[in-house]
Each structure stands twice: as C-alpha cells, then as structure tokens.
Length: 213
Image (cartoon, rainbow, N blue to C red; front, side, top):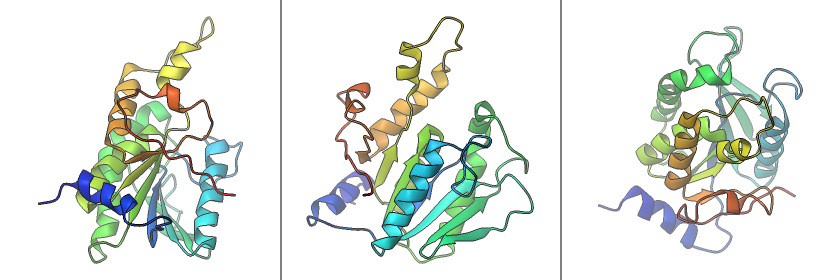
C-alpha cells in the first residue's frame, strides 16, 4: 500500500503547475471573518483571507475551518463566491486564550473529520494549515485523507524565545515540540519571508515559498 507521504509527494510531482480542485484551510484560533485588530484577529486573518480569495479567483474551491466562538454563528458562511468558512464547535461557545486551545484540538479535529465524512473520498485535494495548533489538526487529517499537508507557521516559538526581552514570558516547551512535529509531518512549508527557512531545522524537508499576487 502506498504511504500517505509517498502519495502526497507524488501529487506535487505529477505536473508543473498542478492546482488542487478544493483546499481545506485550517485556522483554529482565529477566523478570517473577524475584524483585524479585535481579539486574536490580526495579520494572519488578512493573510488567510487574501490567499483564499486568490485561490477562488483561480477556480479553486476553498473551505476554511475555524473554531466556533458563539452559538449564534451559522455552521457555514460564504465569505466570497468560492470560499466558505465552517464554524467548528470545540469547547465552550466563547473566545479562549491560545494557551487553552490545545485541550480543544481533539474536538476540533473530530469536527473537521466529520465534515469530510459527509462527502465522497477525495473531496479535498490538499490541506493548508495556519499556526501550529492548526498544523496539529492538519497532520491527522492529512494522514486520514491521504492528501498533502501544506503548513504556514506565521510565528515560531524558538524564534520568539531566542529574542526575548527582559521580563518577557517565553513560549512553552509544548509549543516548540508541537511545531517541530508539524514541520516534520508537512509535505511543504510556506516561507513568508526570505529569513524564514533558517528558522527551521535542516532536517524538516523542503519549503515552498507561496504568496498570492
């Protein structure tokens, strides 16, 4: 039987310019529907929104999975034609601190897998996870669906901890371990800046610089 890693690597090697039909975008802790500058919403929201819109413009269907923070949120919202945002129940219907979210990754992952189970096999061609929490979910989903996992870290604990100012609280070791696991599991890593690749171990595999024009 072909392994998930081999199968996903073959996808990238099929043809130059291969594009997926449908991408599952994972953003556990923040939704692209939130206003940047409020709560946890910031630059990552803008990045996810713009890349999703660009993929849709190119004919790729995009579904963004994010944690539901209110019982009033509908299960699915169309952000723009070709881009849907799915609110996944995971924990209480309220904002949670990022330090509390690892305890909800199992529930979030179950919701993502449940959504895919309503469709025929092969519904999603690729997973793009954002931030290490989403990468943990993407790692399992990619194994289950036998599709490639593309990961964007946005920030890295090792980098942040290496530049701590006096009095700053370091990122927990659990995050460092979780990030390394995702980096090793991903089929491609997105480097948003020229300085990003050296932050990763040389043993973590290829990077894929990818940005929407």
